Length: 323
Image (cartoon, rainbow, N blue to C red; front, top):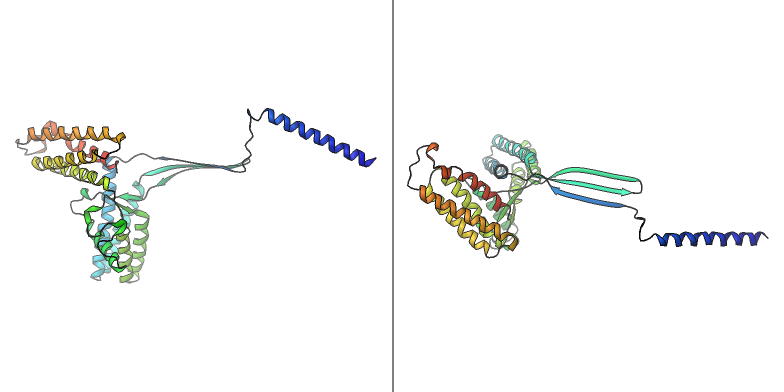
């Protein structure tokens, strides 16, 4: 009797289970329950973009870090520990400035498992700072090239076999140069500690490492853009000093390089490239009209050219974003 009752219970339970399954099938298309044990999503978006002045200032900051590093190495060669300590200290101040001004990316993370959830939103700084050598009156890249060449020789690599197949002697081939502020800070702190311990060779090794850590990248299609970018700054400097013929020559070079770039430019960018060509040509024509006029003070600058340096900065920033 007990066995029969137990069997009956199983039958009832089975019938109930089947009915539930049948019911769930009816609603499977309209309401499907998420059975995931864990879900996660990561959303990123860039923070505010740098203006042309901010981008130039940040680049100059990175350049000064390299310059102070080179000065520190020179002081170490002369066994001037006090001077090296001062140079390294200045470089570390510049690192702090760069860290504060570095562009940021907004990162939002959401993770959920059952009723437990985690949400985090933060700003992630980008410490890879581009260096635009055309902004400098005196190039900061010479010690970097020397350090990279020395490192290549130590590793038994010939001068024609640099990174990415680029010869380390062919200085102008790189189209993008960047300094990792995080790595630079690490090497500077180690060098500072070594100088305090009067370990000259160790300190110099860390500073040389900072120079060799400078990131070079090369893209054949970007070569014309590098020429455009550099000549826009040359034109700006020439105009600010009322050297109109030099400004014209620089603009002619920029215009020719843009024409070259347009041959292989992405179709989606071609319209912007053509518009910039027209603007450069228009400015060149304005300079020709004003070329013979004397300029003894800023007040004498022709109105048509007074806003030109600002426009050149804007165009430089636009080209910078095309790399």
